[in-house]
Image (cartoon, rainbow, N blue to C red):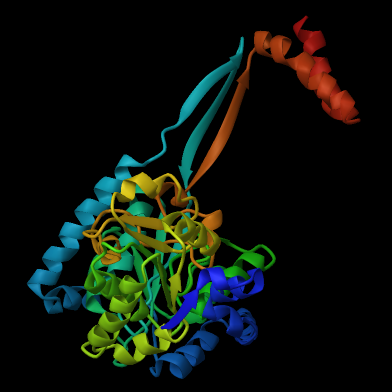
Length: 432
């Protein structure tokens, strides 16, 4: 990991330090994704079979997971994993159920009632990565809030394994949403299929889920297509920023950095500290722990674009973090809650030495599908509300139009929209 002295840099150099590695390859990715979308739009399921053979190394006669494969999955998953899935699901459901937005109504003028009601998105498309590592935890994070929201149809895509099957743990986690339809499709082609629709894959109204740079770009292009679907957020390669003071445990900090680095070669991790001794100790720990990781090769590639940043104090560290707007922020500092109010841009925050980011990845209860690439400046992580639409309703009586109508008519005339004004004034005349 490259060592940086933040206060020795000018503004341009600081911006370069906070640049995501995926940005340097975005042009190549953009072109490749556009080609996949064009192929799927033109050739449908045949294009999906070609992509699956090319990228996943398997030829599939049918993409959809049937009852037999679901049953086989339950038999093959170890009992302790089944128990952990159930335990995590219970916490995730409890947290998300508590956050369901309540409808409300208010009489804003005599005889004029305004209200806001929630409706589920009818058909949602969920993407669960499984390229270098299957992610049943992501299936939990997507299916549980979709079910709580009341979505009518839930479509889930996940890459096939070399033998043509889906990962069994992902299948069991997906069944947190009864009636879910699972398709063995991965990468940008899965996003294209759910965005466009084919003979076998239903077109969805909104797409959800994280992925690599290709998946992230595919979701962006899906949003931009004519009649395109909605997306949850920009959710690309994983990232973490750790703010640590001199009292932090170097082994803990190093493990948190590596837990994100092992996601993929395009992941990014940053450590920001006001302590040279802590930075030195973490660098040693990263090297020591890296050598023991089965995914050391992947983590090593991610670390090449990662940074150890020396700052003046913790206040400056938080300013650096807000400029970066990380997907995950760990405050490995003394009295972390004292600093919480200073943080404005982060997908999810982990307080203190005993709260590893990995806890949120699996079973704390909060959602791990979070905005990446700096999108945390304006986007939030998934919740039940992500799978719903809010619709406003107005109900005016004769008294209501009389009390609020003159205001509307005056503003309509001020804007030069006479038909708007007339629609109100006719009712005012009739009410009088």
